[in-house]
Image (cartoon, rainbow over all chains, first blue to last red; front, side, top):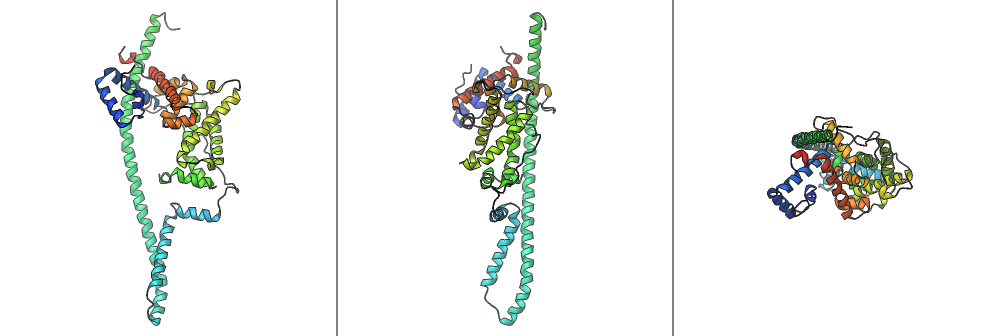
Amino acid sequence: MSCSPFDLKDFLLQELADPQRLQVEAHVQACRSCRLELDRLRLTQTALSCLRDEEIPQRIGFVSDKIFEPSRWRRWWAALHGSAGLGFASAAMLSVALIVSVATRPAPAPRVAETAKTVSDDEIRQRIERAAAAIDARYAQRTEQLVKDIELRDREERRASRAMDEMQIDYLQRNLQAANRRQYVASVSDGGPR
Amino acid sequence: MIFRAVEDADLIQRAAKGDVEAYNLLVSRWEKPMYNYLLRIAGNREDALDLTQDVLLKAYQNLGKLEEPGRFAPWLYRIAHNEAYTMFRKRRPETGVENVEPRRTETGITVGGSSVFPIELSLSVASALGRLSAEQREAVVLKIYRGFKFEEMAEILDCPVSTVKSRLYTALDLLKEELAPLEARGVS
């Protein structure tokens, strides 16, 4: 029976608010039996973590049904909002900006305007392509960096967690083996194994 | 990883409007945890796979009834719990719900083979879990392996939080006696 001010299992499962958690931590420091009890609960939790999830033997997928199929407009809208639509959206925004800029620019003298128009069409297209490519490249670079950072952090966390697991499991295994030996000795002294 | 950035809630909203691909993406995220939950309560792979398919189809058909997309997980597990127990009842109609025991043709548990998780320890855990009652085991699976909050577990199991806690804590005491025995620590 634990004399902790709050349930040690609530503490183990992180169900306590901070002030209660601090009270339990302080109590466990001072009380040997509660410390041992918490130690056993932690070992139990570690042992349970040995069982890993299985891969599903067969992937599940649903095929499109005409009744539920979204309209063409909604599919276009979804595509625009998807990650693949990012580049397209950037290019579209640039196009709009350029068109507005061209439309609001004061009209030059007719002769110059004619020459400028033929040049600016090509130029606009090239600029749009260059700008869209630059945006895409920037996004790709940022995403790659982000993925690298996350993977690195994940690897470090896994390594730390693995080291901790190894220590606890080794301890747990020794305990279980000792318990089994004790049980065997007890059964032998009770008249031998059956 | 990039796909992960798309929130479930967004996929749910799109799927509810009939976007099957959005639902397939949602399925790809949830099929493995769902299969493993059902595997541990049903006790064999064949039933677990059949139930997983049924649950995900039922969820798709009823997605429009989900009021809060943020509560998709407990809602989905509630469907799974009901489907599993409906199957158990069909197999043993004379048995009350509280006495329902899953078939135990297999352990329903994958034992580890890596250096970190030695096989004998995994077997001890599988055996200890197998000795719990169906209700206690389900409480352990939902809390320890699936990480649900007590309120969510109460919603999934359709019982008060106090009952959920009682089942889980009794189970933890039993597991503790088997997996971290007091005698083995040299304390009596």
